Length: 307
Image (cartoon, rainbow, N blue to C red; front, side):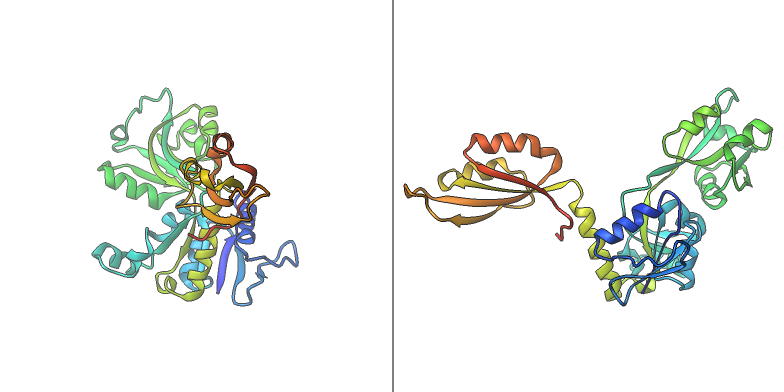
């Protein structure tokens, strides 16, 4: 099985790091390599431009692809769930026939927005104001679909860069472009009119490989990394008599794991308690645990969590 990943840019390092954390160590042999093996002999990596990855997956050069939702949507469509890809509704069937990709997982990085923006002083304040006007974009498929959905007839002009400059050189009345912080839009005196697409990096697959055992293995491995984000593992000792109070304090996943510890010289029973809690709760939880008698509290990071 081959996984297509971004070969450079801001998505490359986070993607490789995610695969490493999921247990798929990537063997690097050269700076400009096109392929790489992993520790799993059945899984290899294909390096490609982020914009080309959806097509590599559709054409069968790769089975899975990691790239932005914006790129996959622009290049030919996305099925939002694996369940839909297996059939069961007409919309999903139509998408499969068009060879759309299945959005398996939101990998929770590379977040950005595709927005409709126009010059601050240009008199365009709503989508309706663009009726019969020109919109420049690097995402013509998404943009056409958007304007069709809002019932506005605008002329779409495809550009390959510097989209934000087109309204200032009379090439377009507005733009549809990617923004993360909005800084570039503000610098170019462009105001956001509407949000077209909320995007992040996703794990995509072709519909015909969704149920493949190796694909499911990769999905489970990556899910375990995502599930462990912002979680911490707490271990502590507590008097057995205080166990109900300790359980009341812990806001973890399900109930804590409790193990008996040998009684001390006075015959007092002690238990060891292990639990997974959200990182944001650790500060207050530790204080509350001490108040109910817990001691020897240890907090560690979690690499992977299979739920």
